[in-house]
Length: 343
Image (tube, one colour):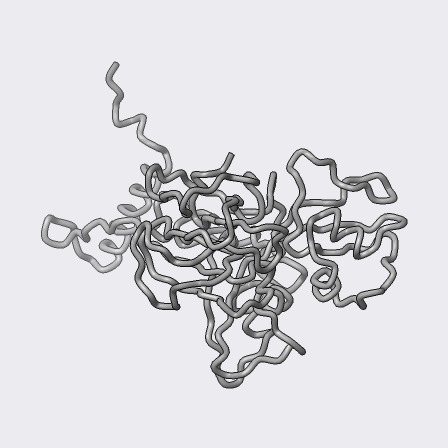
């Protein structure tokens, strides 16, 4: 069936009619006539919508102080929305005049996220310090009667001292019923029922501390599957814990077993100081050419340095149990893609 041009979109015809009427009126007023030499050329629309919004009466006011545009430059409100948070690990060198608060604002994380990931004592930083900025993960728990820091640490496989530090509590402080406590690096099985608050509502929610947004069913990570890109990251070994933490798995093997680079890339973090390092202990992070990152934690020793280029299968560390670990194993995370060894 053929369609006549009469069925063209009404908005387009109206726009063309208005254009020519205006042109004719202008020509009449000036005493001129239109011909092929004097008629103005049509101008292309800069908005994909032929009938974009025009102001007047549809302005949204937020909190009596902010205006929300009815249309973005593309004719939709899409590009005025907040961008999703990133799971990537960043490295920042402290400059003169920096403070924890402005660095936290720069990366859109909490101050405690930076303190916890870098073992900062006394909340003091100095120019030249190199800070690891992790999108730290953990659990948000509402305290019920009888719970203590020790019991929460045991329940969620956390560390009582870290819980106290993150929540700015004394180590022996009593927990008030109904108060909310963050469990840094806490873990809970996806199928486990969260503890009930006094009102009976669900209150133990898996949460990304860095972004403040809830994620399920585990503590973060995920992404597209990249078949064949990541190689097995250790000599031998067997998976002892499936997907947990930030898109990570645990691979058990004897202490000192060689840890291998899962793919080629550049080392951006190499912590070999025996410190807590947010529970990772001695660990390293490799940035890969495709934009993903891999993290290798709990090593007894790290054999590479920041800036080193590594090849797939290269020995980069030796397995251990530093940080938050109860036995020798490799905690292996993939950021920006699916973990191919998750089960």
